[in-house]
Length: 379
Image (spheres, rainbow, N blue to C red):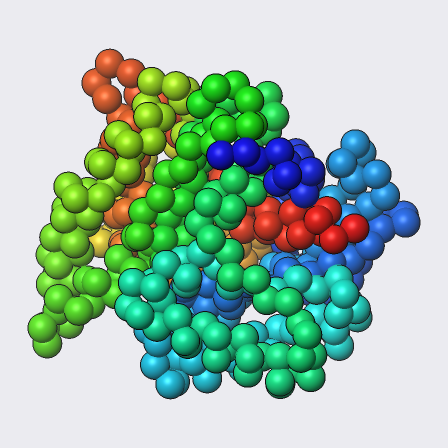
């Protein structure tokens, strides 16, 4: 597959990673002279996400890239029910109004998309009409009948993610895996050129794993039963989908580095290494993630913000750890952490061989890569 037409859309990965420290800001505080503010709003499987980004002049060469605001509202759109539709529509419109009214971003610099995870789940459940109705209703409520709301397919999303997240120096020996709410996508460039991309895709994500587990509870909503049913869901996903997808991609012998992005990557990186909050990319081992999975089920108190900040010596750093780890727990409850981290571990397992374990990296802020792509596409 030719990807030359995609590469020009992207701000290099170093620019994406440069803005991590600014995520917690709540108002416009420009970092650069002659910069422009853009907003991306994405309807994903779990909810609606908004990123407000400052891009400076000559950003591609100077690194003038700053994340001003990154927020999300959980609405569970892929349940495809009237309540979740209404919640998603209200959040979609609400975040759009926040961008225009609070951050004063003009409509032409606000980009709106539906994620590939939503697209895949809707096609699987024969619910595509729900996406069309959401887009039509959104256009009516914001009074923009010609507003573009692209429904992204998994291949385009995977290519843009790789080019936007992985540094150029590691582009051809890195396998990118983006674990979303409704699906997992990624891939790599097998021939040392961006002309050809090999796709990796799973119809499993953090929320779809959790949903499949909840459907198996059969009235027993205890945590122990949830864990038991989660084990069965993940075992089936591994045996029927994950092993096949990894083998089919041909990535194992060609990829030295496994970069993993998505909300669960941010959550695990933040809770596992709170002392590295300033690091946009955190190296982890298979054993560390396995320990995390055990801890979130058996001893979740050890991952509470107060416990994680206990050994932080500096007051300012302690406050930052409390805030950021608290934000993780607002986005992911115990069961969604179990589902997402369990899926992450099953995928990592395919690369954790006895003789050649790959290097694993969790990317915290890969979720805004598509915004930079749209910015460059529409300049």
